Length: 158
Image (cartoon, rainbow, N blue to C red; front, side):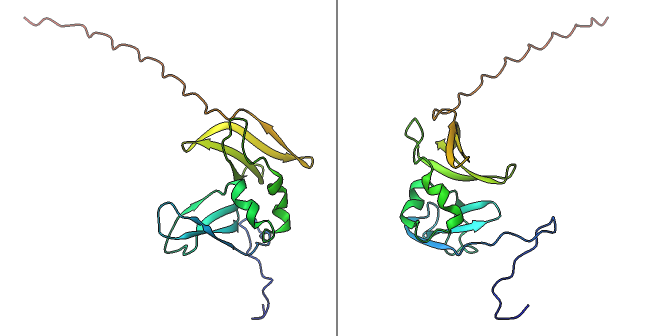
């Protein structure tokens, strides 16, 4: 390839060419939680994600919320504009996060409460967002009580 050519793509393990990536979008209004830095919106093999601007030095990444993408819609690649129409909150008023399903290879939105996923998800099907589940956290299943240990027979020695 020529030095002036910027249209080169990485090859995936399957042998096919990786899809073209969008240019990173700086988001100085979003401060990192763990390090003194701000986020940059990047396009990776697993969809959109936020990474620290000094990435190799500061290794902090997270999924973006839909409402964080709205101010940057002019800079966002047109192939991701469908995400801007996604619900901003679920039925329980939790903020929606953009995630990528490796199984179906598509972007979807979901909600979390205290770092735990709720049962609410929305997928882009037929030109519109289809939501299912509720925004309430899934209740923990109670552990079954363990069976009591059987008493060992005592052997008398004479």
